[in-house]
Image (spheres, rainbow, N blue to C red):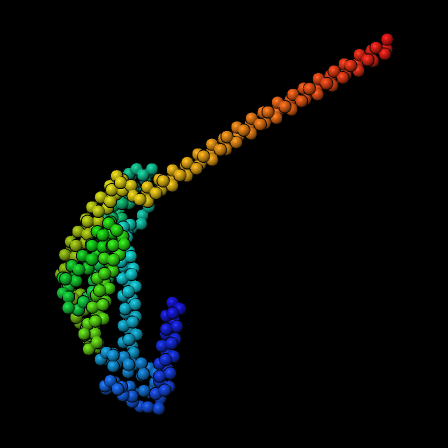
Length: 311
């Protein structure tokens, strides 16, 4: 982020510097050809550059293109990261059951997530993604746009159950490829003023209701594939524990072993302490008994001496 702001600062400083150096001239002719700049203000300087780079474009077009590409890149980033997750609907199913056992509420939560929420999520992402394809892929028929859009979503969901990293690559491959095709399109540089046709986009969107039944069929197919893959994945996890589960079991075993070792040491120390206390107690008792016997003997001796003196 710091480098980005530094780049912008250097860009504007260099622009103003170039304008100041050229303020005494009305036209500058490039030695490569008829590359002319009419200088009246720094904004005109930038605008003249963009007009020579792309016919019909201006500094405002440049800002619009940069903003549009940034918005599209942000959308694609969120799109492929979201759609490539294996747990696309993060719901804690354990709270709907007891000790991992199935219950009515657990089954209802699973059905609500994968029968109602999942199709809605797929449909929304499909509409947004198709809209971007309508804009970027001008020559692609609407039925092909629908097919490609839902195919990318379906392929991403399928590969997510194999490797999530692979699903991310699949999810971002074609969207960024479309952006590259858009940027290298001849129409983008030769006729930028008519590159986006509102009438053409409206005509394409008007054909969507005709394909609505096909779109619903595609979404149903994706949902069916998701349910099948999800079921197989749960069975696989039940029969073949994952690496994470094995690692968790190993950690638990190590913790149990360490706890057992510490408990044994504590019990051993406790026994030694009890034995030592008993020995100390016996020693003290014997010492007390001995001292008591000595005192009694001394008392008896003193008593016998007193009686002898009295006689």
